Length: 424
Image (cartoon, rainbow, N blue to C red):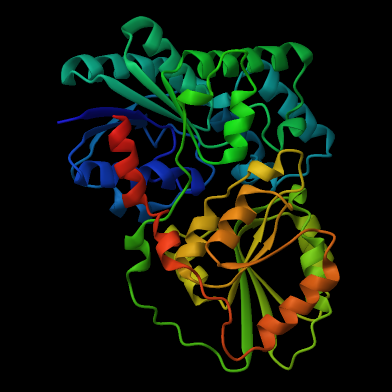
């Protein structure tokens, strides 16, 4: 039997997109015969940005779960300013122009490199050594963010010479909100060196998009491209197996967006185009998750209804996706946007609902949507075309977009677990 130790900070009851990848992959790895050990932080000491107890039911009974203590400086900060003022994913919930927030970001980035959750590392490293020795484990996967988790794998590689796979779900020093973090030249240099060490010393790198593969390949003078394996984010077929009980309302059209939308997403072209649509139907845009207040302020007084639903359990997110008439995908307006593949895209695909994508001309997201025949993509310069296509989509009595279900199924977690089994 193959044995694997997965080291992950985010694990149920933590919520959010970062949990989904290995929560689902570990289930199918266990079902396919791998002995999977999960090393994570004690949730009572963790500084999770969201909690989703519904995900606990997805933790497969065959998994071996190990938890450790941690020292989380963010927990003390949240007691002072309130949890709602602690930055969430994409910094969409705080005013990053305020002096206080800039000061906090700067302290975070200059005294806690690469991130404040590094306080877990010494506890996790000690426990990982015990698990590896006791269970005779040869392969360790570290997954990030938080990227401090990769430093645990780096140390285990140096001390125990295990096979180490670094799973990098997001950019490190190229993440789209990196400029908001207030790094000094000194801290930025250290951060880049940590990133390079992880990339060069790991035995294998997993990442989620072609764009990220290019970014991480560029971080080293060594030829590391051959050791990078592309395992995109995906979806769990089990999440989409239950029948829907929500009846469709007559003469209405719902466009749903799930997840985070910060100011960097710059979605204005979609709302301007939607305002030009001529229809007798009642059009509603649903936001399920965290949306920047500046964006909300711009779209409140339009000709369509806007509904904001705070973060909900994951199973409810899937229900909203499946119940909508169309799904909005927006890739942030940032320098490395071409390589961004959000986790929601694959659940959108599995919902078999038309995707309206605001994405770069040449991007991984556009390539997948078009290859799967799952929707229509637009740049931010195509307002008139977007308005025309939205009009057609909303007024049509039948969905003209017919997704390629065979290609979509290649993104299932079950299929991806088979690929990881081959690596092991």
